[in-house]
Image 1 (spheres, rainbow, N blue to C red):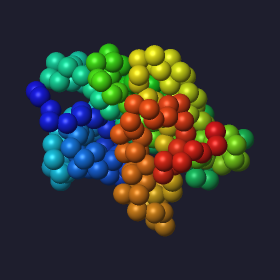
Image 2: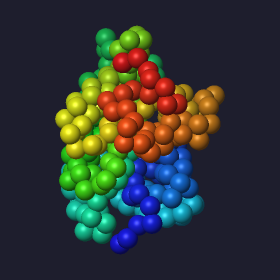
Image 3: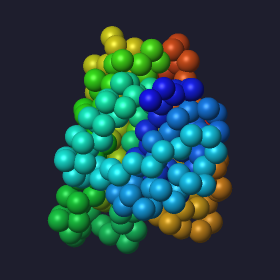
Length: 231
């Protein structure tokens, strides 16, 4: 299948930040693969988006679905231009590192860190076929070591690890011209963030900024609204 614009894949795109990111990329002319664990959720989200938005099933914790989707995208499109690792779980408000349920922490890391890692590895061959490849890891200032305190241990540690992965990937993929950045959307009014945050469209705009950087743009950075954050 030929695309009229860049091809983007967004994980966890059926709601919240992921959905808003997919909508904004589609409005800019990207063909967007709207990914969710439940194919019906992906289809409902894609149906309401502008441009070309195509639903796809993807559970980032299931190696079979990751492998199957990478194979299918390769067959159908032959490349991938933008990968947005957005899928995340468990903002564990009220938990403390001193007595956290470590099984809960492991489940959080499985999605927030290993899920993004697995998806990136699976799609690297397709990203390498793009003239302008971009990887965006949706992170959080909760993962910033510079300002980190107690609380939300599973989520905070998972995002700190995702930031570290961002640095590793950016350095290793620099020779391939693949720009890899972490983006904090800020406190956004979503199911995970709860009421009181800023509009989800504002949080998504910073992700789209990183997904559409010019070739001369930064790599290996941590940003919010296009501005650097402390690691």
